[in-house]
Amino acid sequence: MITFLLLFVMMETTFAQVSLNFSGGINAANLKYKNLENAPYTNGSGYFIGVAPTYKVCEKVSFLVDFQYSSQNYFAGDINSITRTGFKTNFINIMPEVEYKVHKKLALGVGVNYGVKLDEQAKVGNGDWSKARGFELTKSTDFGLTGKVKVNHKKLFAFVRYTVGLKNITNLTYTNNDGQPVEAFQQLNRNLQIGIGYSLSFKKT
Image (tube, rainbow, N blue to C red; front, side):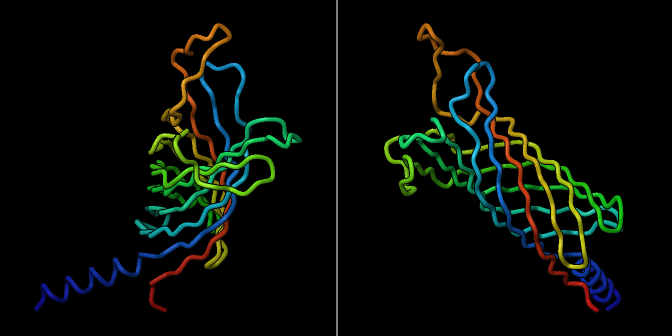
């Protein structure tokens, strides 16, 4: 009986420290190139939506895993050209993060990002997006580090997160002016997210 009561109290305490954070916002995606002089793509905008189960470890520290659908766009060619080509990559991102509350309404977070590609889409000029067929520009997974600044107000929050990709994500081979493959070439993902959200707490009132 005593064991049961202790287990019940522990479950109640744990449950009271868990919340679900729902968020959405915009992506400002970019690509960083290593060992390539002229970048073939420029950055573009996109959006994301996510849900993050969050566990409050103590008054200052929380641990969360953000499960996120993220759409990132890139463009090639002159912005005024009717043949400007756009490429869109849609990911499911899994982002474990640790948050540290530096103030009642301000928290800093660090973590990792593991992205799984869902699909690729392309368009030319002002045309519609359509699924790319017969080729894949981007590898199936991405991996990187995240840093975040978050502002809390009651159950609402806003944040800025920056993701630094560490994995070469391109399937393409680039050549130099002599037509030779560029050695040690890498295309790394960079993404700035600006989002807002709502925290659904399970703590009893």
